[in-house]
Image (cartoon, rainbow, N blue to C red; front, side):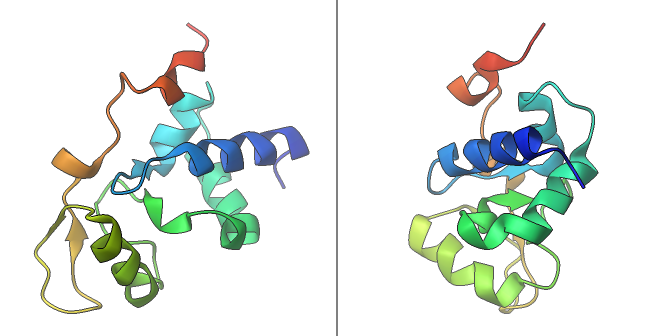
Length: 112
């Protein structure tokens, strides 16, 4: 299990993702100066219910695995750009426009 400090840092980043935007697991790891996107996923698996979990997606642009129906209303309400929306279970996030840009302040704390 990741350290309590890492858990807190991941949850803090997720809380700061603006509505209508997403970050990948790797983006969050990068923002924390880490190379551990799987550890970010583990934090979400255990503590994701307490944050805006739908704003964290795999690099494929798919919604969080097993949660596509739960996530879709959040995306629609927040105006998150989607593509290929066939059904509640079959869609992707348009990462080219929904992904938080690397010049956002969340990334400003990354150690060089």
